[in-house]
Image (cartoon, rainbow, N blue to C red; front, side):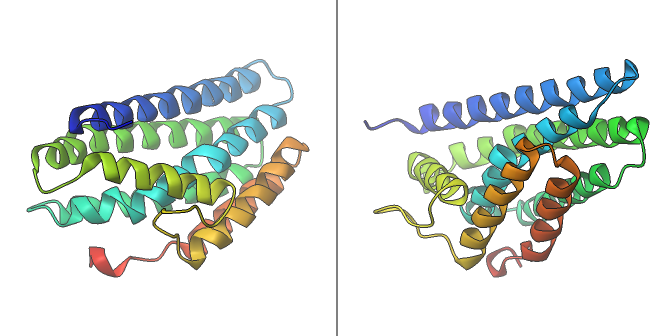
Length: 211
C-alpha cells in the first residue's frame, strides 16, 4: 500500500511515541522497585531487554537511513553528528546501569537513560522530521521502508529481498543483541548490559557520509 509523505512522517512519530512510552514504563518500574527497597534486578533486566530489542536496532537503522538524509540538509549536519553521539552516550548509560553498585545508583542511571532518550526523540521529531517532510527531494515513505527493514535485519536476519542491505556491523550487532536479550530474559541483566554497551561502543564509529 502506497502512503503519502505526511503519513510516513506520522508513522515515524507514532513509533517514536511507542518507544518513549515503553522506555518510560520500564524506567519507572525500576525506580519503583528501588524505592520499595526490594529486588530491582528483574526491572533492570526488563529495561535492558527492551533497549536491546527495540531502541538500539532502531538507532542503528536511523544511522543508515534518516540521519544521512538529514545530514545533507542545509544546517543539519552538526545536529545529526550530535545525535549520533547521543546514541553512544545512551550506550554508555546502559553500561553505567550494568556497573551500578546498588539499587539507588541503578535507578539514577535508568532515569538518566530515560531523560536522554526523551530529549533525543524530541529533537528528531521537532527538527529532523519537519525538515525532511518539507524537502520535496526526499522520499520519506521510502526512507520509512528502509528503516523498518534495517531494524528487522538488526533484530532477526541480515538480508531482506529488495531491502537496502545492512553492512557487516549491522549483522554483527544483530547477533550480539540476540545473545544479550537471551541473557536479560534469563535474569542476567548485568551481563546483558555489559555485552550490549561494549559491542555498541565498539561498532559505533562516525559514518563517512556524516563527516
